[in-house]
Image (cartoon, rainbow, N blue to C red; front, top):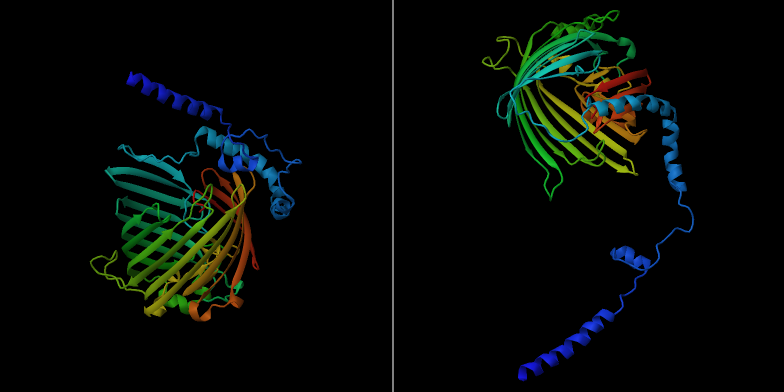
Length: 449
């Protein structure tokens, strides 16, 4: 009897409470509150009072210069897009970021651009890679051009160590003299032959959740052999004819160095299809010392100048807009201190600007001296789905002493535009650059940035 009484009392308390809960109306929300909380709402959907334009007036004003600049390229884009689409659809160009490690023992062959630097001309390279043991790969690469530039490279790559042998022949290098104010009328050329064997070590700390930047430290030691020869370029005088005093000290002289150094890189750049934000900072030290007889490639050859090279480089960028429109700024300083044998300093060991080394509106090898400073500003914007435009301007010069002689008033300037083909990242570019000495056409394939 007591049990029945207890159940009856409990039932009378629970049922009214449940009914009250079911009957309670859901609280109403304003459209603004529903939007902020992302909760369901019975309010009517929000509609704009008038049609929303694709771009507002201030956006039209900001985009107008880029639209005018890219207008002539619409026809180019319509011609190039089908070719790039075919490359993507046929698999000729990779369209996935998936890493595919080389796990089998079969050799891999590849054909690419020569990548022998400015003035090398048209050409190609063939490379074969073979896995030796797990984590170690042997690669052999040979490159040649129509201007008779050649390069042979053998690389044994592992982690963290690598061993590299290289041999290059460059028969038509441009030379206008030493100093920032050399006249363009003094155009000569020289040839250079070089061999090196380098042992290198690299360690890298990848980005983590707290610090979105990778840090890499590299060190190397190499024995390097160089010799400067008479230039082979047709209808251009060889350098010893215009600069006999300089040539008398180093022409046809075998020079050997023991080179060792270290570099530190901090890189937080990110973005697609090109990097659009972040910063890259790099500093390096390299010593060119007297050769060691036990390591020299040519035992008994005389040493050249002994010097230290310090390099500081920084780059940053920012992007805006729905498609990545990117502003970039690059700055680079090279400072060399010559300890002994300054009169035996090779042209190839001096700092240089012009062409692919900076100040692209000038000829390759236009300026030579001990130190240099170089600054580049770029604006990159899309032209079509797979094409983008790079508008840039550069300032820089070479000096006997960059800390004492560099001034805003003595910087050389060049500017230009470049049309870049893009898949996962830029893989080809063709452009034109201008300076007070004329215009130069540039192109690259495979290594754009």
